[in-house]
Image (cartoon, rainbow, N blue to C red; front, side, top):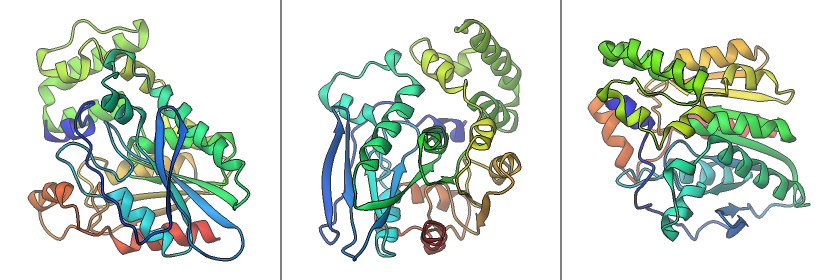
Length: 309
């Protein structure tokens, strides 16, 4: 069940942050719930801006959570900064709610994350410094980003994004890791989809189907990434690492099949948190909590080149 747990990396926790004053940065509040960091290279002329959206759980602007400090999104932002591209990365709304002590798990909806991303997109559309705005979505943020990008982004990048609705992803993982639970999970998801509630789930699936989280899962599973990415009429880049133990390359292939004109890149040795892995799953897992391990340079090059086309 290790990988299932990783997908649902805690709604709650203490967020670790890391800053680097080397970069021309500005902290911004876009809405009462959305705080982030804008970094803008000091170059002449108009710039492209990347809005970077993190994955599931209480992910902060740097890609970190409680006891999971790898600075993956921070390194991505800084890497494309060095290539002359501005970026805005932000704390998910539940980070601020947790700091205020106002988070209520049963009130969280997947659509909230989409609304936040659209609000950020609209905010920067009004900023004359930026000639083009791209959305980069990592993991869960891929689906959030591809829906938000339909509202007028100039390009979209999916990194480690699922190609199936979340219920299908979880059932597939269970079939490999805990096959005795897969059928019960499928029937429970079917109940949730049809009735808005699931009651007859196995105790072994309580972390997925507990009552307070069901409304969130229900709103998440309404979105099929294959359908959402096919709606995009802007340039699309799909990236996955072949060392990703959370999102298989086959998920990226589903996205590519749904969007045949997208650029498609599988990066050798890159894992889910964008780090280079030479060895086994133990090395892979340890990399989730190495704060100063750089991300794969090839990722920065591919993303930057795509945005500069």
